[in-house]
Every structure is written in structure tokens, then in C-alpha cells.
Length: 350
Ligand code: SF4
Image (cartoon, rainbow, N blue to C red; front, side, top):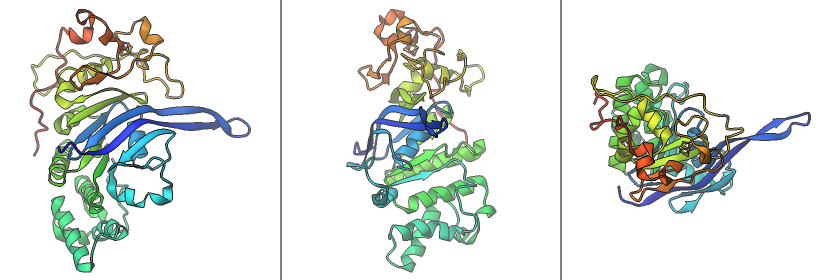
């Protein structure tokens, strides 16, 4: 990683209005994203994790400017894009591309692969002439490790993993600086998942891409990310380097998420933390700490005062009042059974 800042998000909010009543006016809001900040450098992967409904995909769509924001700033390559009118977003669309979860619905079934890849190249005026266009298409197929002559085939002739490679090639065709992967491997079989993750990692190193990897799958995230941001009910509750977070989570929600991930070694012991209840509604988030209704360590202060994200002094941020207690009384620092995840991340398939 170069340390060159590519994407910076500050206090991002996206509140969806709820329409109702006789006149169809606004009767409330879904607080899908409620004050999220992060950054990604060139060549870096930041993973955004959390249960479904926590707001992570809304963050992805917000930075892609697929809708307008309620509040906050999004800065891409030093330029604010959150307040740009939709008509001015064309150059931005080239710089930030997306790979979605479902490779079946993401590709137009009536277009051959050649046309699918040619479209962004033509739209952004990247090819000098038709020979250059063909060469670029060929190079994209090489990059995603598909044979060049497969450009003459239709999407339905490919497997799920191959289709996701085409989606990645289409994203790369625009020569972006950032790729948002929104559950990009979640719909794939385990072995295919590993191949696509390895491909994304290789491409990132080769091209120096910044990547926002949105996923609920912590085993995948541990394999391929540099930093992790954990979201709960519209807010980031913990951010840290991969090893620091997986080795010693500083938020009870992260601790519970990690405890639910299967350990690859059959004999390895780890206490499973089962959270009570469901995620509360983002229409009416609980007061104080949003996690207090499910937190096994909640105490009085948690029900009235919202904890802020605070650094432990080593770049490991967590939003939890437990860190104001003396270390000896902080259960997160005195675990009987280590929550430590794994020391050697491997998905088993190259
Ligand atoms: Fe649990 Fe309180 Fe920490 Fe929230 S602030 S995570 S309720 S201990």
C-alpha cells in the first residue's frame, strides 16, 4: 500500500423516508446509515462486515452515488462527490466501479461477452481505435483468467464463477481506482469463492486498486483484507487492522460475530457467544449504545449514553463503554477462552 488516500468518507448518513398517512407524507425514517466514517488508501482493502440489515450495502451504494446522501462527505481522489449533481458524475463512474453479488442478474443475457466488455471502454472513450478496443478486451480476459475466444459466447454459457470473472473484467474495463465488491462472492460455491477471492487479491496487487469489500462472511474477510470495519445498526462499532481485530476484538458485537465462525482445526476450542434477540429496527434504534439490547455485558450507562469510536493508541478503534473501566474489570480484556480466530488464514483452494 502506498498510503495515498483514494476514498474518504466522513459522517455519512442515509435516512430513507417512510411515506404514509392519507396524504402520503413522511411519517418517519429508516436510519440505514447514521454517521459512518472511513478511508481507503491505494492498494488497500477495507472490509465492511455485519449482519444483514446493518447498512453496509447502503454505504456501498452511497459511495457509488447510486442515490443522494442525507448528510456527510464522500471524497474520491481528493474531490468531493457527495454534492455533485447526477449529470456531473460521469467521470466519477469511471473511477469507482462495482461488482455485485449475483453474477446471473448482473450481466445482460442478450449481449455477448465482447459487447459487455466493450461497453465501458467505449462509454469512457478509453480505446484509440477498434484494434485497441479488441486488444483491451483480450487483456481483460487474460486478467480474469478466461480464454480470449470466450468473448464470443453468451453469459448463459458460463458457470457462476466464470460469470463473476466477467463482472470483474467489466469493472476493470473502466480502469477504476476503487472497486466496491458488494457480497461479490457470497452466492458462489466454497471452492469457487476461494478462486474469485484470490483473483481479486492478485488484481488488487497488480493494479494498486483500493477495494471496499462488503461481506457478512468473516472467514473470507479474514483471508483477504487489510483492515476491517464492523457495522451494527447503521454505525461502525469497531475498526482495526485485520490481525488486531481477529486476534483481539474490542467490541462485544465483533466478539460474538467471530465466535460464530467455524474453526478449521477440529480440536480448537472457542466459546460460542449466542446473541439474544434480533437486530432492532433501524426505524427506531435503541437509545444509548445501539447494541445494548443484545449485549451480554450491558450496564446502566449503556442504556442512556452513546459510546464514541475511540482509539486504543494503536489504531484499533471501538465504540464501547467497557474501555472506560479499569483493565482488570473489562471482560473483553480478560477472556477465559480466547476469541482469537486463526493464525494462518487459508480457504484451502488456490
Ligand atoms: Fe455492550 Fe455497553 Fe459496550 Fe454497548 S457500550 S457494546 S452495551 S458494554
